[in-house]
Structure formats: C-alpha cells, structure tokens
Amino acid sequence: MQALFLDVREQFVRTDDGWSLRLRRTVSPTHLPKSNAHQLLIVPGYGMNSFIFSYHPRGTSLERFLAESGFEVWTMDLRGQGESRPYRRKAGALSLESYALHDVPACIHAVLARTGAPKLTLIGCSLGGSIAYAYLALCGVDRVDALVAMGAPLRWAEIHPLVRAMFSSPALVGSVRVSNTRRLMRSLMPVLVRAPALLSFYMNPSTIDLSCAHELTRTVEDPHPAINRDIAVWLKRRDLEIKGVNVTEALRGVKLPLMVVLSNKDGIVPERTALTVLDTWGSDDIEVLRVGDERNWYAHANLFVADDAPRLVFDPLVRWLRTHQDQNRP
Image 1: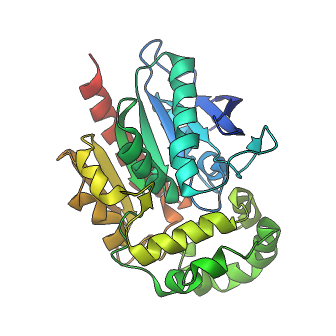
Image 2: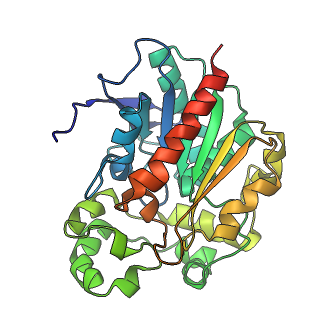
C-alpha cells in the first residue's frame, strides 16, 4: 500500500542568544482536522538530531504515525544539532541550561505564533525529556498542556556501569572533543550487526531491521564536551540542577498530565531512573507505559525503531494524547 502524502515544511527559529534552530512541521492533509488541530513538539536527545522521528526501517515512523492520527507534529533540532547554526559570531554556549531556557522556549513560541494555538504538548525523547522537565521547572506551564517523557532520566536512582564509566570525570569528558561520530558509526555498524551483544546496551537488534543500518546513523551528532561535562556533573549529584534550581524537586509545582514511556531493559536510562519523576510530579494524572517483556525485550532505541514500536509504543501514545486532547478542549 502506498504511503499517504505528508506535508513537511521547515523553518528556522532564532533564539535570543544567537542560534538559528531548525523546526520542522509535519501534517497529513488527509487526517488533519480543519480546525483545532492539536500541536505536538518533539524534543530530541543526547548526540542526535530529529531525523530518527521521521524514519522507521520497516514500518511507520513516529512522526508519520502522529501526523496520520490527526496531530500537527513539530520536531526541533537543538543548538549544535542537524541544520541548527549560530546566526551571530558570539552565540550562546551549548549547555543543558541553554537547551531548556533558550532553545525550547524559542521553538514553543514559534509553534504557537505560527498556529495561533494557546498551548502545545511536549514530547521529550531521552535527554529531550530531561530538557522538557527542566523547561517546565524553570519556565512554568503556561504554554504547555501535557508532557510525554520517553526514556527520559531525571534523578539517577540507577546508573548503568558503562554510563558511569563514560562520565566518571566531568573535567575529562568536558575537555575531549569527539568528531566524525556519524562516519565512525557507519564504519562500525557492519561489525556491530554481526555481534548483536555489543548493541544490547542500546537496542535489541532482534526486533530492529538493521539491513539499512547506515540510515539510522543519520540521526547521530558529535557529542559536545560542554554537554558531556553537564551530564557528568548531573550523574555525580544524581539530580539535575540548573541556575541553582533542583529540577527534580521543582517539578512538585508542575501540575500537568504526564505520560512516562520506558523500556524494560534500557541500558541508557534504567527503569528506576525513568520512574523517579513519579516521586515529585505535581499532578496525579500520570500514566506509565512499560514496553517489552523477557522474550521481546526493549532497550533505549527500540522505543522509536523496533518493528513493533508502532503497535506497542506509538498507538498507546496516540490513545493517551487523544484522551487529554478531548479533556483540554473548551
């Protein structure tokens, strides 16, 4: 069956500290309501751009699934990702603080100004969910009606040994610059595909079509030393602190609907860490979607590109979004 046409348009949004961020709008004209379309803004995670949301090796991508469910889908590239570039010589630095206090607000403002909608729903993926937590904790909830956090850490209640080792020294990871990461991943992929145990930390390859693994690497970006340093400090403290604010504790004042999506065997963000938000979230309107079992286990990347992700992840997500969309309508 031929895929339905998607209307995809890009624009660039300027932050107040000198960055031009790529913002992409995707809708399915066949499914988009004539009025009161619900706006979704997807925030990507660590060392990645937003490509992965528009790509699925074998089925329907997250972006297409949401668009064909009648939503107006917006995806952003944070500073230093994808096509985002500084527009002035002395642009703001890369940091978790800049992501939360400059990039996300700029894109939210652009979406609402473009559509005339009073609010939108944030979907934060991996580190993007943590950035969304920080945005809500420090900037408030006036322009957001709900949050979906997919594989997102908050308080590091549990840390995988490999993650702990990688970020053991803030000074070291903050001084080492890594380049050509995408090219390196493309060269390593044939080896990793033949040794799936090496990938289990990040994905369960038995449920992902890796015949076009080079396509998956298009989402890879070089990790930035400043972001690595911020993450290393966060891991040592366990809680994320921005501008002196403990984000975990500040979420007690955030009274929004929340959906937490997690994998049952995630090596990047273990289940206990993904669920720490339940301890301090300011609303009782919370749903947890735990994906995977012992036979068909899920790791971090499976949430987006597993063969059955459309059925096990995207479809429950849409049902939750529709429920809260109906509740928020006047």
